Amino acid sequence: MADIEEWGKPVERRGRLTVVLALATLISAFGSSFQYGYNVAVINSPSPFMQQFYNTTYLERYGSPMEDNFLTLLWSLSVSMYPLGGFFGSLMVAPLVNKLGRKGTLLFNNIFSMVPAVMMGVSEIAKTYEIIIVARFIVGICAGLSSNVVPMYLGELSPKNLRGALGIVPQLFITIGILSAQVLGIRNILGNSTGWPLMLGLTGIPALIELLLLPVFPESPRYMLIQRGDEKTAKKALQRLRGWEDVDAELSEMRLEDQSEKAEGHLSVLSLLSQRSLRWQLVSIIIMNMGQQLSGVNAIYYYADNIYATAGVNQNDIQYVTVGTGAVNVFMTIAAVFIVEASGRRLLLLCGFGICCGACVLLTVALTFQESVTWMPYVSITCVIIYVIGHAIGPSPIPYVVTTEMFRQSARPAAFMVAGSVHWLSNFTVGLIFPFLERGLGSYSFIIFSFICLVTLVYIWLVVPETKNKTFLEISQMFAKMNKVEIKLGDGDLPLKESKETFINKQRYENKTCLKIKDKTVY
Image (cartoon, rainbow, N blue to C red; front, side, top):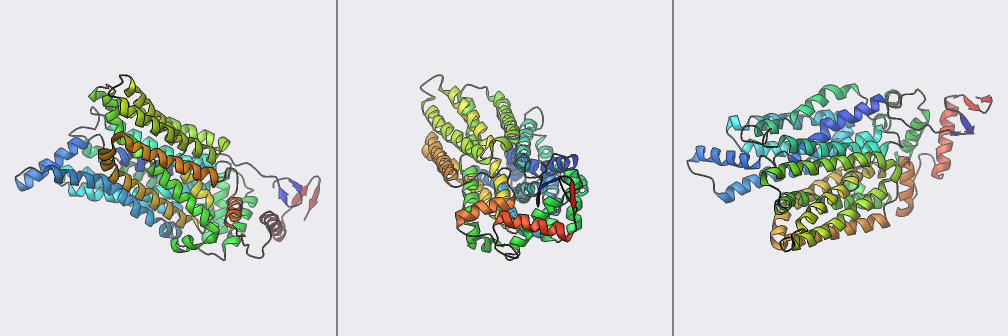
């Protein structure tokens, strides 16, 4: 039992990274988030060989070569079906996590990875390109689910002092997935005419590993206690995750959250949109997720090869420079894992969007003058790398963390459904519009991205509070003041701090818990 300094105020124990918590984090992130990143980049390198396969297959079927416009349409569908599937996957988040739980949803989600992996792997043998397009949509559903459920699962497993660091791990594995696809896409490995079907099919391996290993780890204790009412299982899960027997203080905080939500029930998306008490949280996650995708990160990657070529990089060596950029992305995301609890979420978001805004402005200038000034292409390369660094430390990972933190248990699934839908629709929009934007505005298109970064930065500066080292209820209390509402508790309207202490005292008294106060024992 924890020592007691004052009546009803237990000395708080700082959570630690136990073996169970670490392995649950790594397996869920590798089995789910890794696939998201891998499938983002997997078709970039072998695209010439895949398009050649499309053309050859069409020729064998119909006896004439495929028209260029039709080939462009098919390839656009192959690329865009992935974010479209992601959008539909996001729509499935709330019903699945409420029905199957967080861990259960991740296990179920592996169907949407293993089936398309087989489909893409046999596409060349089956001589059908349509199966690739359908498989890209299905694996997009997998990404849409995993991009929302993994941060939710880890956020609910983590103690509050590790919630930010572990919340960035999914984004870290997304960047590792991108880097892995870039490495495997090197011409001498699998990015060639014979290796691309295997490269596409490898996405099923992380899913198989997760399917075999994740069942031995606990379900979210908050889900088991608050949504299932299974306190015994929740307590056992917490004891395994924390590495100690005394988890009463954390269970009491969950019970208090449960009481404060009983009047609300499980919120649907429509009821979430109409809740005054969640207004600023909802606006914040929408703006941050739009800013994350509309800030030009996908456009930067799209433009990178042209920038490297203009800078004089040998055409065959561009693939290695791309891998180097991916490695910088991974390294900076690792840095974010270690600094997020010290610096806080808000500072990383502000710094990240600020760096991206400046890099986009400088990149516009560099691209405009790179043909007339000999050293300007190297400035362009530097801008790309600086942009990647800025995005990796804030805009990429932090929105997932704060989406978990800003909402309590009843609203969290619907909030992730909204955030995920905005994320994937914005991703789809950039992929669809940017080629036309680039054709019409050229390098000046990055001015639009810099403006979006600036608007997002100003909003975060004015509205989004710091959430590190705070419980979900404490964060709700901060937003309650902004929304000009009061958080209702199950049995009264006491202030949050007083209610929490009263509730813990009540639980301890009812359970006849022995409280040790200095050298005296009180029952």
